[in-house]
Length: 391
Image (cartoon, rainbow, N blue to C red; front, top):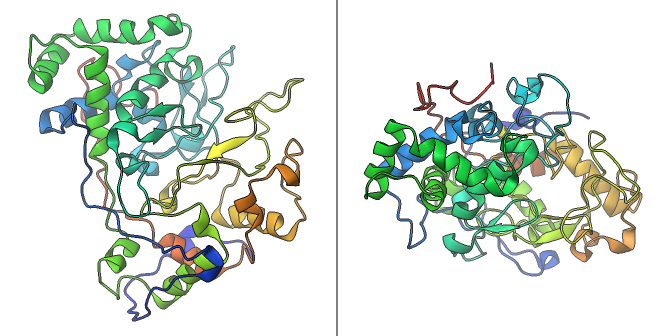
C-alpha cells in the first residue's frame, strides 16, 4: 500500500483518550507542547528591526558569491522552509524545489545533504522537559555548529552552497560583509538594528539572520493543542498512533517537544546515488566517518519531504519501510558500508514498525502546523532577484 502523508489529513474529531507511559520505551513520556515563542541568547535579544533586516538578508542573493542564490532558495516557505528535493543545488542553479537544476554542469557538486527546515529551528536542542539554551543549540546534520548565530554564516563559506569560485573560503564572510557595507540601504538597516554608524559586521550579519529564523515558529499543531489540554485537537486514530509511537520505540530518539534527542546515530541509510563514490566509500560518511547523523525533528513533516539526511526517501511510508527492514533483520535497504553490528543499539531495539501503519502515520501528521509565516519580501536592498534564480 502506497500513500502520501497528505492522505492522512484529519481534523475535528474529538477524543478523550489519555496519555500513558510505555514500558517498552523505558518509561519515557511524549511531549510536552512547544512554547509559542522562542528565547534568544543574551547577546542577541530579538527586536523587530533585527527580524526585518534578517528577513531581507535571508532572501537576498547578495550573500552568495555569484549573487545567484539566497538562503531562501533552499529554505522556501512553499516547502515549509525546506526544499522538496533530495540534495540541494546551490550556486549556478536555477529553479525551485524539485525542479531546481544546474544551469550548466561544471565542477560545482550537489550539496551533499538534504536541506533541513528552519521552521522551529529556534528550539533546537530542547530536552524532554522543554528546556534549551539558544546559545548552544546544535545545528546541521553533523552538529558541527552551535547556535543559529554560528550556523548562519557557514553556508556563505561552502563552495557548493553559496560561495562558488568567487573567492576563497577564508575570504567569504568578509567579502559578503564588504558588499553589505557598500550598500546604503543595508547601512541604514544595520544601524537601525544594532546602533552605531551602520557598518555591517560578520557578527551582526549572523545575529540578524538568526533573529529572523527565530521568528519562524510553528507551535500550534494538533499535538501541541492536545498537550495543552484540548482533547479534541487530535483524532482517536492519532492518539492511538501516539501510543504506537511510544511502544515500538520511536520515542527513544525522537523525544521532547521537537521530537529529537539531537544526538548523532548510525542508521545505515543507503547512500544517495547522486553523490560520487570514491575508493574510501560513499560521498558522505557523516560524523566521525561512521555514517552517523543527527536525529531529525519530526515537526512539520507534512511540508518537508523528502526525508533523511540525504533526502533518499520520498514518503514517510518509505521511511517506515526502512525501519521495518532493520526491525525484521532483513536489512535490504541498508548501506553495505554499515554492518548490522555497527548500527546504533537504540535502532536495533525497534519492534513492530510497519509502513502501512495508518494510525502511526496519522500521529505524525498531528505534528504539523500550517499556520507559519510565509512572507516573501517584494524586493531586497541589492536589487537582485528575490530568492535568487528560482524562476
